[in-house]
Image (cartoon, rainbow, N blue to C red):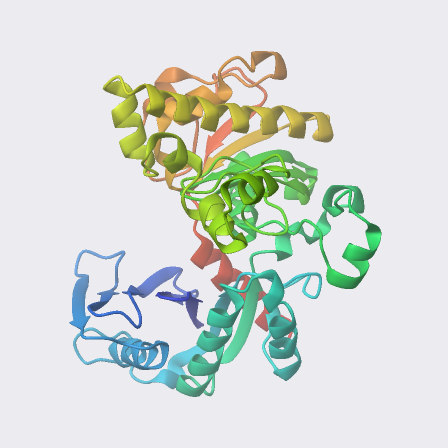
Length: 403
């Protein structure tokens, strides 16, 4: 069972090829700067083995089509390939950002599914078109493979109406689907499954708060294995303070920016998505640089970190109130897995909720799931490395099992 996972963005393509029978990654790669001068393709053969081979190619410019054709060629290349021909791939799992209310589970891609993804383009105008481009091109390159769409929004479709409805005129939801959807669903789903296995408890008996922290960030309240609340909203802009996104904001601020600074809607959109968050407060969005500057006495970097941590702590408290009982707190994503200062800050002062971090355990750096709570604590605090591509592969495999 060889499954290729494709994540097609507007200017990039990430991919991984899995052999799920052997439970290993055969190949992975990244195509960057599509349509720009100096397109870069990095391809790895057997990335989890000592004899791995890495090939890097720079091109004048590649399109989605020519780039994906090159990726398909490398997968079956004599030196860098891992398959003899494209027919060895049983299925292709595609990351699709927005499934709206149409998709509550992953779906085998056919004309109806493609049409539904197109209908959801207004909800994700920057992402769904690129996802569709990848689906079309890959379908031609691997005609015998079953294609499956796995949606970022699917995991959050179990939220009750009081969680996803905005306090706006109800007809905006009925006619235009204005509601909370949530994102990072594959990550939240993956780490909750892994945590249940690690704790040796059934997932449907666990209440968790999952905290995905990268350049983008989101949190999820999980009750008996199902999402009942998440921090991102109709778009990925809501919720936590992020690298360049503002997160939760007084809704009147865009009107102020328009009325008093004569900013256009496009300029405001760019400001909130690309120039806010950590970058807006202290000038940089890389958490490693923010921490470094804070340690050097940069007051604005210190402020950015305090704001970042404060927002997460507020959500922990809010989700604790919604869940009533909490078994596990999970950190994941590049920052959640690697920044011990952030984890400690987020848990500090929450001992009354049963959240007690062990400083010594928290400082241990391992690329595997681990506990960082105090040894006698009933509420577990876990660091769980996420693997969204593997989750897409597993969900693709699950869909195939029903065919």
